[in-house]
Image (cartoon, rainbow, N blue to C red):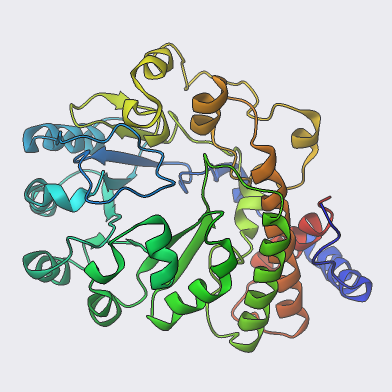
Amino acid sequence: MCNCFEIKEDIIFKIEQKLRDLESDENKQMLTYMGCSGCVEGERRCGIILTKKCQLACKYCYEKGKNSSSMEFNTARSIVERELEKNSCVKKVHIDLFGGEPFLAFDVMKALVEYLKSDDFSKEFYITTITNGVAIHGEIQEWLKLNRKVIECPLSLDGTREMQERNRPNSFDRIDLDFFARELPGTRAKMTVAPNTIDGLAKGTIFIHSLNLRPQNGLAYGVRWPAESENILIEELKKLIEFYLENYDLEESLMLKIPYKDICMRQRSCDAGKSMVMYDVDGTRWPCHMFLPMSIGEEKAEKVKKINFKEETQDIFADEDCKECSINKSCVVCRGMNFNERSTLMGKDSDICILTKIIYKAKAYLAAEKWIRGLYRNFDRDDERMLLKSIVLCSKLQ
């Protein structure tokens, strides 16, 4: 990897000096923060595939086995009853309604949400569902407005019209972006960056900001990244860093927001089968969506059934470089993708690894610039300690 996004020595010196003053306050809560599910101790993430139907055929989609099957309401109800009543150690459940395109099963979704609202469950819960936006019109829009405090609805949007159409043909003009901007401001916009759209990373991210949405941009997995992607990524990140330093009141997009809590507090990278679970349309239970037959095929899915994820202690990292990496608990290594591509839970995509290191060095560079300019506000001592520690760790990536 090239020597990109190097932080000036005098800034690193000031950061390390400040860090020494803060390190004595290390947070004892570190042992409770889990992994990729976003859960802390006492929380659980439960995904439910409402339907395998989808109106689009995105070029990078990992769900190769989509079909017309959907979940019955009684199946969905029994799942949430089980998840919200069993296991006394779990106090809060994040219910994720998935597809396909989940709004193609709107009747089941609507009935399930109404049931969740009407029953007095023993556990706290919140609901999210991600959509490609194509079906969000008329009745569905009115329902989302009425339930905006009950269900969060992130939008998959890959940037500008041109970027969206490259990977999601005939979709951009079918999305009512004005509705999301007007009625659901601040909605997360999942912007998947693919090899054929990486040259528009900055433009697409800024466009999403202009819609009053929050860009959650990330790299596409399971695709081949050509070598020239590295230099394109660096140049695009430079443009975005300049944008965020000029517009410092904006929250950075996912690709440039430094995840200091992940870096400092995560116990593990992957939560599949632990604090994360996924239910298929027939109610069968899987470790996460990446292990579904729809994602990896029936033959490989049968092998997944033989893995005891709760007792699985095998290190996710396959080589010494990963074990020694300063961001290995925050890294986006995916066991499901490993299993699909290499039939092992361990391992990594070397192309993604290089691009991820570039991204994390860019995150650290931007965070260091914001800190030295005094642009972080309302930070307590513990947040500042983790921020500075993360900057130092990311700056050492090679």
